[in-house]
Length: 168
Image 1 (tube, helix red, strand yellow):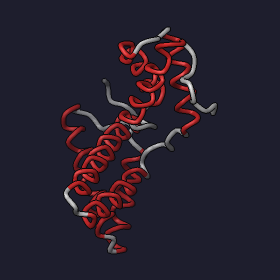
Image 2 (image 1 turned 30 degrees about the vertical axis):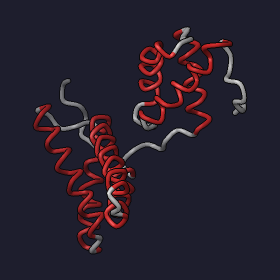
Image 3 (image 1 turned 90 degrees about the horizontal axis):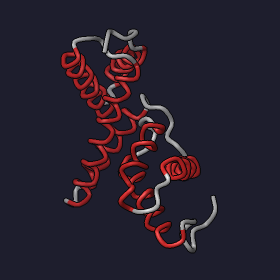
C-alpha cells in the first residue's frame, strides 16, 4: 500500500499521551505508550506512516490482546490485574469507532446468510467473510462467530429462524 494520508488519530494519541503524563494517569499512560509502540512497529513493518484505517487495525489488535489478558487474569484469580487490563482496554477503545448494537449484528448476520445462501454450519466461512468485512472492526470476531454458528445450526432443520428465537 502506498503512503496514505497522515493519521489524525496518531496526532491525537500523542496529545493524549502528553496529557496523561501531566495528569499522572499511570494506567492510561501505560496503555497509550503500548499503543504508540505497536503503531511504530507497524509503521516499520509497512515502511510508511499509518493511515487512520491502519491505525484503527492496530488499536483493534491491542484491544483484543487486552480482552484475552482479562480472561487469563480472571481464570488465574487475579481480579486486580484484570481491572488494570480493563482500564487499559477502555483507553485504547477511545481510538475505535463505536461498536455495533446487537440488533445491527443480527441484521448483518441475516444479510450475509441471505447473500450467500448459507444453510449449514459448514457455510460458516462464507458468512463470516461477508460479515466481518462489513463490520470492519466494530464487533468482536469471536462473538460474531458464535452468533453465526447459532443461526446456522438453527436454520439447518427449517431454513427459518431458530425455534424459540425472539424477533429483534
